[in-house]
Image (cartoon, rainbow over all chains, first blue to last red; front, side, top):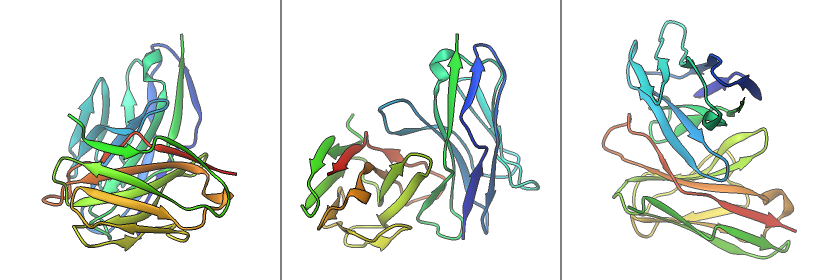
Amino acid sequence: GDSVTQMEGPVTLSEEAFLTINCTYTATGYPSLFWYVQYPGEGLQLLLKATKADDKGSNKGFEATYRKETTSFHLEKGSVQVSDSAVYFCALRGGTNAGKSTFGDGTTLTVKP
Amino acid sequence: NAGVTQTPKFRVLKTGQSMTLLCAQDMNHEYMYWYRQDPGMGLRLIHYSVGEGTTAKGEVPDGYNVSRLKKQNFLLGLESAAPSQTSVYFCASSSGETLNTEAFFGQGTRLTVV
């Protein structure tokens, strides 16, 4: 079946540091890939997505590129802010079970001033 | 601009009690999902529905039942609550037209079973 593996957290960074959160996936076919963010006490919300190989999703300074050859979708941001502190989930949709999304376990990011 | 609305937001149950969580979406989405979120375990799919009148089991369906009598509503039932069902429950919905659309989540229901 489909699976998503995220780099384990928690991750603690200083403000303005560079962020990378690794995500790799296993799926049949050509899934779409997503990053969701969950702020404290809230539900998940879409951060960015990519729907085919070599697509780059971007939003709020975050970027991720769909790499089919390495089955990866790593999240990056050049300069994090305290307000980026949240849990980040990598997800795919459209693999083996087309009607479902498959989520990674989430990576907690804390940014200190 | 409601999106996905879950009720209630918080609930405390005694072991053996029953309850129903309601999820309502106003986006005319075909697909709806119930997840539970536990520390260190990410999101686990309980049940899902690909359209009105349909339901299917996810990863962790035991102890839960669901119904989708109306397209906009997806109910999650606990017939006999157990402490292991203490969790945060999230409902989500997504469009069925294309599979590259994202899921929209509710705010969550924090359930404690004592």
